Image (cartoon, rainbow, N blue to C red):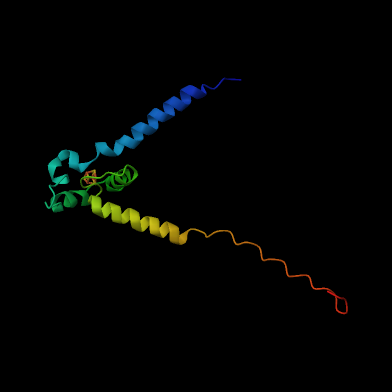
Amino acid sequence: MKNLDVTGALASLALHSDALEEDWRDQALCAQTDAESFFPEKGGSSRAAKKICQSCDVREQCLQAALDNDERFGIWGGLSERERRGLKHRSLELTEATAPGPTPRPAAPAAVQPPEGTAA
Ligand code: SF4
C-alpha cells in the first residue's frame, strides 16, 4: 500500500487555491488602464471606471473579493464603496428575512383534569 503524503498534498492544495484566487487579477481590465480613475477624489466622478468595469470579465470575482475584504476605497466590480455597503446591507437583510426562525417550542401539555365526580 502506498503512503499518502498528506502534509505535502495539503501544502500543494493551499498553493494551488491561492494561485486560483489570484488568477482573476491577471484578467483585470483596470490593470491595463488608468488606475487613478478607480480611486476618484472625494466628489470626483467614478463614471469612467464603472464603464470599464462593465466590460471586465472578472467583475464578479472582483466584487466578491472587495466584499470579502471589506475594501473601503475605490471602485471594485463596478461599485463604489457606498454601493458595496448598500449591497452588503441588503444581502444581510435578505438573509435574515429568509432564515428559519427559532425552533418552535412544543405545546404545553393540557392540564390534567380530575375525573368527573372526584374532588379536586
Ligand atoms: S471589475 Fe473593474 S475594478 Fe474589478 S478588476 Fe474589473 S475593471 Fe478592475
